[in-house]
View 1 (cartoon, rainbow, N blue to C red):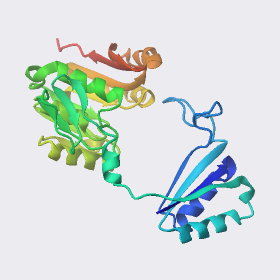
View 2: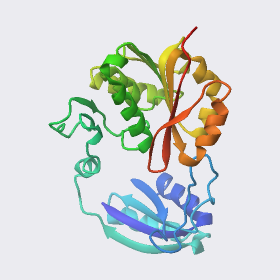
View 3: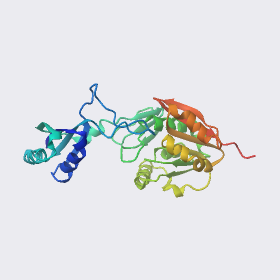
View 4: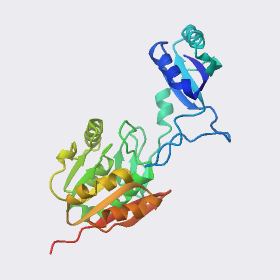
Length: 301
């Protein structure tokens, strides 16, 4: 393969990327901050719930892969001949050595410890000797591989309940993503697990991952979440969690636990205030600037 590298101004980066991908036979196109690692590096995305600092990087590095040198040369000649090409600069054209891309990608994902005996393990790894419960989960399109602090805190909470407590629980995983929380609940003995998401791809991923881990759950769109549950888990973001407060609390059985993740430490007070009319929340765990909150609905009578 052959790589073409361009430096592109903010106003032309989308135009250049579309041209390379759609008309000039690029196998792939990637964009990164040309000033990354320097004092001029620019944050493109803000924290969850906040607007992006700007519409794009002032200068972008655009990398396009081509089948061969001739195709890359024709693409470079064409794109640098455009009327707006004053915003483009050719950085390099070079051969890319063949690599085992599958093996290279897999090397970036290692087993993730949740507790001493509970691990998330990609399919190409051996489970550690200490692991008594293992979720086999490969990175995919749906959110939730166990590497993010919000997911790990939810998994720790489930593990700390223990099989004796979970065996009596009907669990709802709201916004299931990969299904990792629902699968964890099932592995820890939950008597019934319902996993829902607004994204059909997440529902498919959840069903696939449940089969891969030999657990039974019901996965579907949010309309599947009927009735009351003993545990309601929602790992989303602070803004939707606030909007969903009546719905999530409405699915909580008397004596049941609502466990919420996806919020930054600085968002704890505002989330507690949003749920105060319905449920008293407290911080259950925190890691790397993220918090896990939860509350228990008073038992009936």
